Image 1 (cartoon, rainbow, N blue to C red):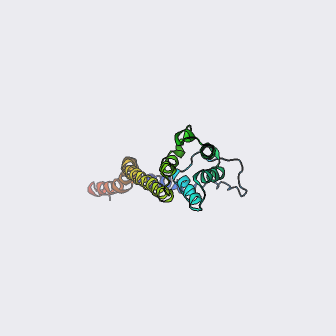
Image 2 (image 1 turned 90 degrees about the vertical axis):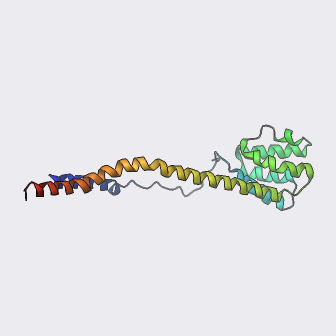
Length: 180
């Protein structure tokens, strides 16, 4: 009876390893017309920094990056670029821009109003965003370890009791009761 229970417990624990799902087919041709839902602000900052480092003006760099990125952030960059070229104020040019462009607008405002080089400020803000993202990921990983303790304990403790303690207690009981 004990052997059957142990065999069933081992079979039940090992069965998910034998069940295999077929792998999803990866498309080989590029999918057209797909716009990413979220745009990385640090990537936008890097792209604008690269465009500005070639020597073009801020509006030209914004237009080039906007046309390359596409989607809502790209349209916002192109719109801001066109507004700046037509003489709009900085705040008016960025009015209605998406939240992904807030960092780009904040960093470039000082360069636009004072004439300073935007490259170092763009790199610094991109690095700050990446550091914050890494810190959030580390904090989330730390809380994940704490949250996993209870489910793992609830899974492994019964298995330990059934596979480790019950057979030992049964063998001790049969030895003490004179069964063998």
